[in-house]
Image (tube, rainbow, N blue to C red):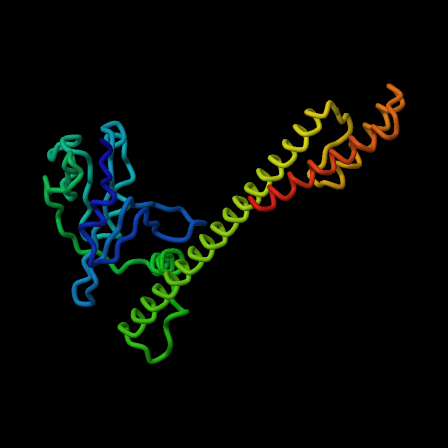
Length: 265
């Protein structure tokens, strides 16, 4: 089971400002990157906590950068899976959190010392403002209270949700129409194939084999029959009177088939 320590750390600071992989300034300068950084929302007591997550002992034992984090927090904690690091192994000024194997919570194995720190460097705040803050300009207007801003945000969210539902309904409606059209075309094609099969069967019963292309209309079929009869007349010297009788018989059968299929359609 993989333990998501970062998510559990976030859960400890639901009411605070919480930043994962927090840098100490712009990317073009020498940086240290804390796995997580949190500050309580308080002007009087802006308590800052930093975290270094370790998933292996090897990574913990060779870590040499943790001291660079101290100037950016009042308390520094190591966070690891249950039992990976012993409390007596972490530096004196730092604390230790173990993650429960169930992934449900973090518990303190050693409390970190609280240290007073100098004001954070200006470039650190520039980084937070420019790189990690989302400006909600589309909701905020001068004179708005925090409540006004969130009311607008919620209204916009509901509007987007309604738009998504409307788009989904329209797409579903179009798909259903396309399916209905295809089903109608399939029924029509099936009937046309049945009519063609009857034409072929009628010709077969009269001993006529049409070599050319078939058609599902009576007129087209009659043209093919006439060509076949002309071929038979030349090959077998059939009399003109006999050909006319056969053609009349074919015409009658075709009328019957067309009438029957029209009633069925």
